[in-house]
Image 1 (spheres, rainbow, N blue to C red):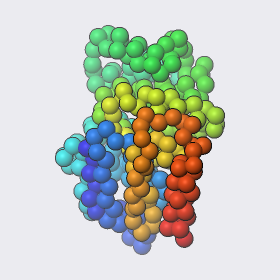
Image 2 (image 1 turned 180 degrees about the vertical axis):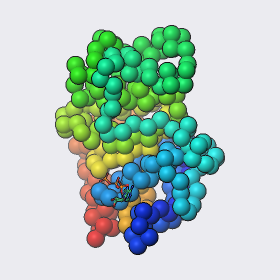
Image 3 (image 1 turned 90 degrees about the vertical axis):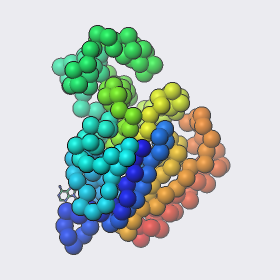
Length: 246
Ligand SMILES: Nc1ncnc2c1ncn2[C@@H]1O[C@H](COP(=O)(O)OP(=O)(O)OP(=O)(O)O)[C@@H](O)[C@H]1O
């Protein structure tokens, strides 16, 4: 679904952000990108979404190239939920349908079904300032889903949540994952989160990109983090990142 070949980008000729990196995301995969602060994760997302053009290399989404094509091909969710405070939960979720001038009324039953599955059925008339952090992120996620795009780019969506809420969000997302039928590229600093949620992890480094396969069967439970295999994988990944960054 997403293929990046030998992509290079620099803001400053002396210090390239990345040089000739390649990665791919297959239909239905959950793939994470982790890397130190400043390693270029957000720049990579801007390139994939079409906000920036590659200086070298190719980005293909469903085999198509070109920033215009990419802009319309992905659903993007930033770390900050960016909910519109003057709109109710329902009206925030319906926003993508308004932008594309779809028939909102016809979609309402489906949207309400999703609201229920996101634990938001009783909150459709609430305003964002009446919601907890976890609920706000679920609304923002649902809004991203309502773009109807099959490829979702999630930029540290749980990064601002406290650890308990974050854990609840992991359980919730793992429970939902099989039914979503989406493809996800996910940015995170959190190794545990990347291992728990992903099929594969890419590690962005100064001199390139490394790939890590997460051999954990699905469906997964958030309790996996206490298992010996998981702890061992986490240690290995941590070592890899620290070693590569030195
Ligand atoms: N518009 C810009 N002009 C010049 N330099 C930029 C610009 N945007 C980002 N950079 C630089 O490019 C590098 C990569 O930035 P980027 O935001 O992609 O990293 P990141 O991995 O997402 O970091 P973080 O995890 O802290 O958000 C940084 O050194 C940053 O200062």
